[in-house]
Length: 569
Image (cartoon, rainbow, N blue to C red):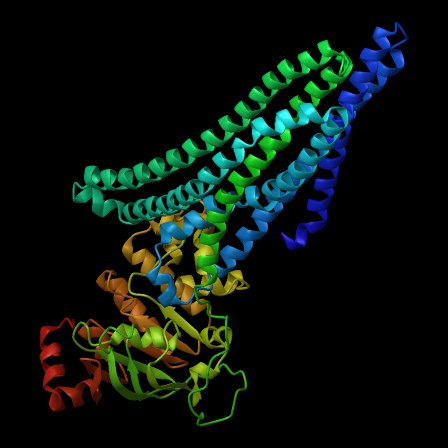
């Protein structure tokens, strides 16, 4: 709220001015009745009363607009901050969260902020001041009738005290259930073809509906207590009205007060309904909004990559930090890594070096820790112990933007984002020229494919690239990496879904790229391994052997067995 405090204050002041105009209306009505009883001219008093009604309505409408505009600005700012934070979460924290729940926090939870940040606060302040003003005016008119009114309405506080904690608990549970429903739905939509192919639509639909039902139950529970509070407020004013009408009529009959005073008091009692409702609504909105704020603060507690600078764990072997386009040398130095303290080590002292320029293949059985090497190089994770060096610099000492600017990373499943083909190609290099794009399209054999598209590079690729084949997605991923002009190219067997002709062509491209940069490839096919300048054999989180294809066939039994299968697992 802090950046918007001036507009919030302006909206509050306009609301108070409108309330002041409303509070003077019963006094004008009292004067009108007295003028009528004395058979005096009432044009001036009637004009004044009309002006007060119109002024009060205009000021309050303007107040509501200012506060609503400010509330939307608060929600927008919160969404900007939350989106920026989510995209900078550390990979381990993101993987522990549910994407659907994170989406619910950005969408539905931030929407609830408009209630707590403006309406709740201003309604509470204005309602309190207006309530005090009404009670003071009622006391000036007749203290006896004021005591009658206050005595009848005291029970509202007991109802509010009982209902508020229940509303808070139900709201928190309802929002949590909405997040769970989003997670369940995202799980299904993310693998819709698999669900359909498995004939699991009914079961998965039932699971999402159960989450929706849970949100409904808690929402109904909160609505029940909100209804109790609202009914109690209205009932208290109605009972007060009846009590004042009875006691006030008796006091008029006894001559203690005149009719105009009773009418003015009843009007003030009628106006008492709004500040009481404002206070109850403010309390309810605060509970709903506070539940949303608590869920948003949970995101603030997740670690971001830029929350703290990298911690140096040891001296680097060189102090050179100049920016260069030369191929980068990679060294893994006694690296130990585990995903969590309660899990076993994935790497158990990985130790090998990759010289600048050339292609190095990493092979080994499934679970040997091959893909985790790339995750450590990109600093998605950090070593438990040991060091990863690029050109002699510990990667923990290299700022993340600088580190990742040197690396082109092609994942095995070659993810493609929703949007146009051009958007995906220039994702890592938004300033790339059309000439460079065309050159890379030719090298990756995408040029003919692009010409066949109805909108060329501007053709939408669908959600997660559903309009592309697996091989087309892999070629797009390779082209995207090449457009970045990396010093280090990481490929997690990025040609596995290509036909033989395209696979051979792209292997030729990779070999060509390896003459100018460092290529590190996780290989699952013998055809890739035989073209590598050097091979690293991994087993059970350790480097078992290094060498060329011919050397390892002679020296290492595991490599010989894997090579004999023609398909490295």
